[in-house]
Figure 1 (cartoon, rainbow, N blue to C red):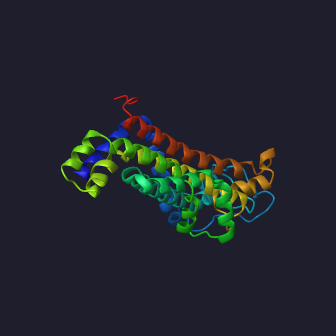
Figure 2 (cartoon, rainbow, N blue to C red):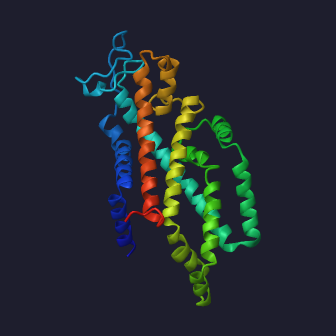
Figure 3 (cartoon, rainbow, N blue to C red):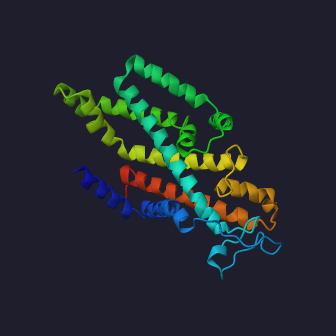
Length: 290
């Protein structure tokens, strides 16, 4: 039954134009992250020289269709090899933030009372913290590139907004007549939460998960750009930082080294945004078109 509902939801996603395009783009990036380093295990580069460094796109050579970087390395191969880090960390960070937000929001909203006050007090404190500064301080202290640990750091404050939103939704559902009937029938609190409350929040949670992934992409790329993470020449943020240090912003030879990683980041974000818009259209009866 659950499997049937899952495939039915996938069909709805595919039927919606926005979510279909977003799903295709997102899956494309995921496939690059999974198989990219298998297909291109080594960096492709030319012998460094004034003519091969920051070479413009060369359509005659597949490896050089994006041009070359500061050491005559293929920009295309660098982007593909850097995809794994960005995709893995952003999806993990989004997962951690979403799970924490769900747990805190459901417990606070359903149990209420002093537990609600304590959890929402902690949430309010987290919401007031300057998240970017806090993340930079923690990352600078640990200097880690471990994907799980880095994902936990990136999600350290991003769960709070979701927790408050889930709590509000749970309060509405908890006081609904349907849930009151289940209580009268003597069904357990666990049954009500996981069989009645959580499923009604599915689409709402999915949208916030995508938002958390988007935030993690910006955060990770930004941290590599700022140089507070251990240097990874293939990370998209590090490539952008390198390009700017070589004068790409002024239209120098490094312009392609800046343009293509930026386009790749924008493309991934566009896919996630379209997917979230599609999910919202499917789930929200006020804007549903079918």
